Length: 435
Image (cartoon, rainbow, N blue to C red):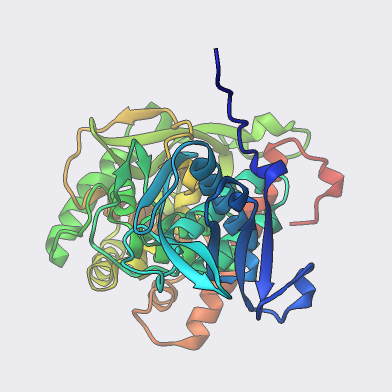
């Protein structure tokens, strides 16, 4: 028997990747100015009589993601099938689909296969979608151990490829999600970036993904309702949300802190937010610090939230959401995260466990958004915001002093929430700052 087995090409051993700036190799990030664009080329594919791969005009901060893409494509070209001029490659990775197209280019007399996004028609394009998806996956792989490194990857990705608002549904290939308009990096930032930026990232994610809208609210466009219809729907919804055994007031002894262990501060309570599911609207039931019940289920907010003045304010907020939906709903993100699993790519990709839920007899396309606004209003009333301060927060009243006062009260509430969560988790009370 004659013949031989061809040795498998190992990208880690048989290939290197050079990072070039102005045609010269660089060894360290500090060798080039901040914000520099670099060129990545492989060295080693030519031993298999294949053109080396190339990425052009890549931000230095995304060089690691670019190297990851080059490794993937190089392994495929050397071990499976060479990519010819104008051909594409794609693969599912970590729940996402990554794809590129290759075009032969010539630099200094050498041929390279330059990689661009799969929908590009020439080598003049950029691999925006592919690189941003690799940057997303890289950030997700390190965020638990090195949050700062993850943020650098995601922020660089949205700077390189911010995406644009769209009404097109998110695509899937081979059962994996396509990171259309880079919405996954925006969602990751909405989960993990500093608190003062989360709402802005969430707004950008909503603008770029109708599927995120559908997952959050069950619709991709809010139904038009007049003030009377909003009030009628809200009255019925509030009564239903506040009904049931788990929603009833508990004894005041549960409010004592002295001598309590962490677990004694917790309670099971339903969220005053309706979630759309294929089976209908659901209300999540979760464990939360007992004082959070004061945002909706306890006096005085329990009564105030159903008052005529509150319903009128709710109608104003819904009208504002019709005009600027992402901006208004981004302002409710903190309240959403009090009651529901924090928004994040893990949840969108289906890897986050859902909270226990109870089915609701209510129905209507406006109710998930209305319930989000009602819950947010209750939380702001619990922080002792006035009606005019709420209007200022949502841009319904142009008054800098009212807005500043409202933001100060909400900041104090968030500090208290953090302390309550610490107490509830059984942290060292002596190590916590005074409330």
